[in-house]
Length: 275
Image (cartoon, rainbow, N blue to C red; front, side, top):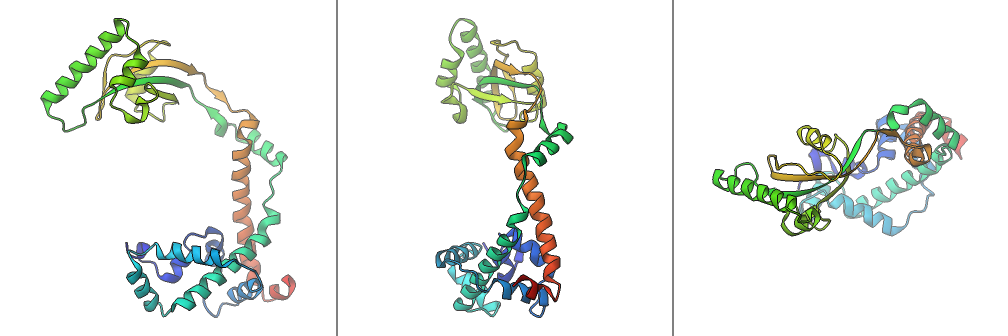
């Protein structure tokens, strides 16, 4: 493909780096911007491995259909290969310096996690969930009417075989046309109403554990569903939710720390103070 969304080489250089991109957004990066100059000077002594630079260049090159288009884009931007390598190395040094500056502000305590958990109970509520297995016979939209009828008849025959004593898991493993679940004897694992079409969920809610549905038709084909388990609504325990909460809070702190650092970089006295 061509450069993504018409971005320039310079813009692509930073598109995969949200931390530095946020800084640049605040600084409205220009060559004569003193804040950008502060960042460049403060980061110049950061040591970055050559392999990291090459990997970043590879990511940049991957945004173009081929090597020729990449080279043409560099030329259009007035950049040679050594210059783009220098730019990338500078970019990585600046990113590394930024990460070091904000790292002390990203720690999240258990108390902060607990407070978030207690004040946002709705985020940790799990709805009613069901576990079911299904046996799928493909008849996607657009299939000839006579073929759809054949598939319906086959699905109904499978229901009769199961009612006659054959094993649902065994038949699912043998005849289901859903490759993703066939090897698991049709097991769909646990799911809530958000994962499946509402009309299917309504039918599953009517089933008792071990009970099987009649063939249900969707735009994909026919599904025979057997309910194998259920779990009532519940609130996740704090220990279950803690790691996700910590990540959420760390992301919030990162955004705040980056914004504050961007503001400080605009201060003409910041360069001396940071040395």
